[in-house]
Length: 395
Image 1: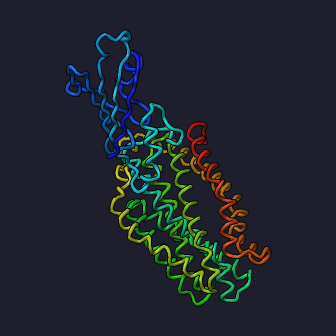
Image 2: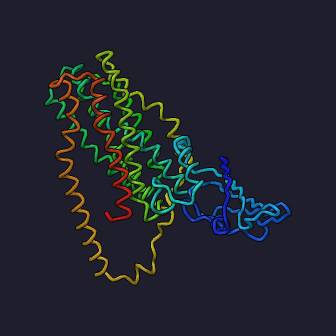
Image 3: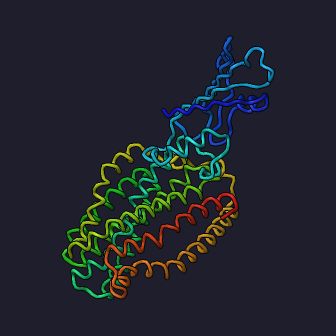
């Protein structure tokens, strides 16, 4: 439990505000009569947690009476003590200082989601964020290393392009993962896909040729794409309606962090022609964490409650159901077209960037790392802002 103590010197109005239950980052229960303790030394009130991203929350007010004979009888000294345990899991060190500042005030901090999360939603988002970091690493390994692998295997840029195109066929694996998740649950498939993706990626370190590396990455990238889809679905099913885009933006930042970790390790490729293989072995360190996350992650509430409503099905007309399907189909087609038009340019640019920097600009692996970090890191600001605006201004 973290404890924060604040001493207030307030007038009657300020005292009234302190005595009111909070409704900002956290919503408190009004103190019961048993929570009000009066004595000659003053009054003590206890406020407990009603809703918020905390496993535990207790706020205690010790209100001291004005000193005898003091002219400003409306002046009060109040000692406010807040004890809390945030539902942020392994991200606690990152939130320690911002949370201490936030709990001292009655304002919603700028970094908080538009709709307040409860303890379960906060815990699930933090666990998904951990998986997303691993997913981000796995998803960028082939892009960062194929130029070094091609040098070792003495293959051309054309061979790189063919290999990357074959790896894209892993979307079939992703579709299989998502289809199974609808019948067997999100948690089980997400955990299994993550562990298998790590194993497939590590197998690429033993590649005797570019064809073998492409084959292992076809499976691994398919699984990572499936992971990414399941993480997004899981978040949408757990987070409140007004904070789903916020959650997606946070997860995107975590994916970028994972991709950045692959870039951090890239300089080992400068040490030896076979050094790029080390990058494929690093994810093995995450297997124990994935097993632990799989045990702690609850099944999606939407999946658990996904029982068809027989009454609604019986009363709905075939005509209305058909119209709804047509609307959903048109929306899906628009989104798919937009994604295709974006990725038809973005994917090749991303995949051949390292080869261009090495072959045409003479960058070393360390130079590529610095270039990528300096050009990509500022994008994190845009991702976070976009997620918040999408929740408050519209998609």
